[in-house]
Length: 145
Image (tube, rainbow, N blue to C red; front, side, top):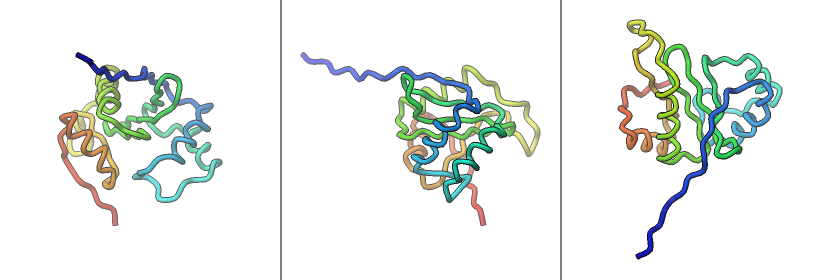
């Protein structure tokens, strides 16, 4: 009998620092879906954004030592999850890491829920499916106009 075993590369998580600007820009250029922008910012605009460090926690996701994505947490308990090629394994590992290493901010009625939630671009069907398979529960669809 032949047994096949799928091996996964080791995931690491690293806090974003200003010197990560170039790696972040490369990830941004390769991103297929976005919520915050429709046009890629210039390198200088991106570097200024990274320097401002706008998120409460901002982490790079590395497979071995290769950047494959990022996630960030905001004070409203929202999570931005950006993985170049998301898979069930990667999404599950990132969500597990977040649960084990961060606690949601205190609830503020009608403003901050007592749980984390992930914002996903509407057209990112793959990530939506992976989150549903991870037993994440959909709570809302938002529209801009």
